[in-house]
Length: 121
Image (cartoon, rainbow, N blue to C red; front, side, top):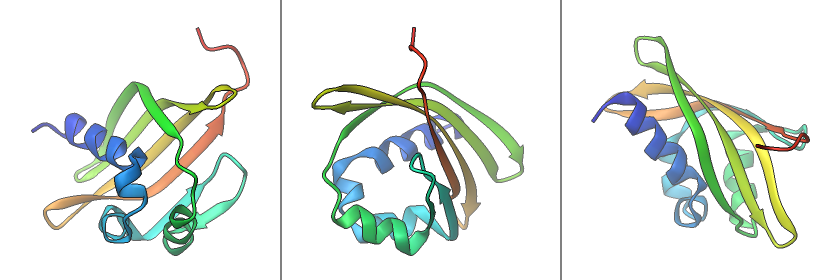
């Protein structure tokens, strides 16, 4: 499987209800030095994300315009548009993640979400 497809599948897994509710899956997918700059403006570490997602009210999210760029051997940047399907409509955010190969798998080391306020065409 090529890197682009692997990273796309991992991003999709992290948006799924099953993975977001499973501490073991999150522990495996997020690097110990993981940092997130959230859409809310908060900064999250791995333990914060895992604790927060346990109490999350799940929202269906879809990914579009997914791109990857290999930054170095075993390091990949993923960027995409995330659409959150809310009761009162759809909210969009631009997302970026840095993935690092660890042993025989990939782990996310950085993630950022930026709310999109302009109309999506």
